[in-house]
Length: 272
Ligand SMILES: C[S@@+](CC[C@H](N)C(=O)[O-])C[C@H]1O[C@@H](n2cnc3c(N)ncnc32)[C@H](O)[C@@H]1O
Image 1 (cartoon, helix red, strand yellow):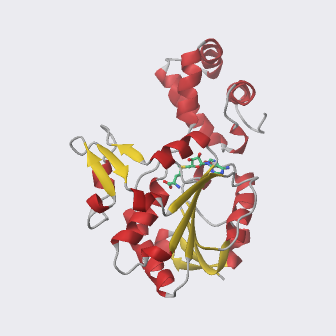
Image 2: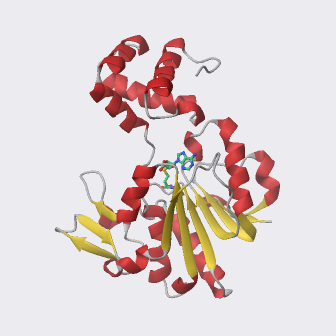
């Protein structure tokens, strides 16, 4: 794989990743790939890309470490709580209208985003949880396995209890074990979510959703892939339905006509 204007040393490392490792860098933007590769170079005390390529090609451990660093499945329950405060209103309005409310968490990582929708619906008396159905998709089969298991551990850097604070009664939705270190999503919450593997760039089209969330994927994606992703998302949102993208992500110019801003600061849009 060669990118115009790319440092030749970086190109070689990216080429190696593309040819020899279980990761396809083609759809990610160069600054993202460079940041992750440079972080591994610092950790392995390599002075330049050529030295790092030597390490990478001779060490199984380093290939595993780079693969891990390139994986972009960082997520949390109720990520950006201000967005969830507005989604609370959106879900209350959608369910008040009657009928089934279909939600799609696209690029759902380990499931904390779709489970946040389900828990919020069950927790807030103004939302009719029984009407809510959630499809959750990701390209990564392993992360979907974790999502189906629905068990999340607090660590030194991740406080799951704190992430669940937007709920009035977290204990209704998760079983908490081991001095609040392990959180298992309860069966009624799990039943609201169906997980499925799906690629937003080349996957089969989806239709008929009232609310689509696609957050914190577009920031990593090469700009040439944004258009196909927005085509997929826009085809999936029903008229008057909602699309939420990440707080540091923007609608491509060519799709602005398709939506009205519902809430500018939280990047929630309404389909025209
Ligand atoms: C940073 S996570 C975002 C998780 C969640 N939406 C959030 O905001 O917390 C990005 C996810 O996008 C997934 N992903 C990457 N490329 C994808 C693609 N082409 N189609 C679907 N999912 C993709 C990754 O596997 C990863 O789980």
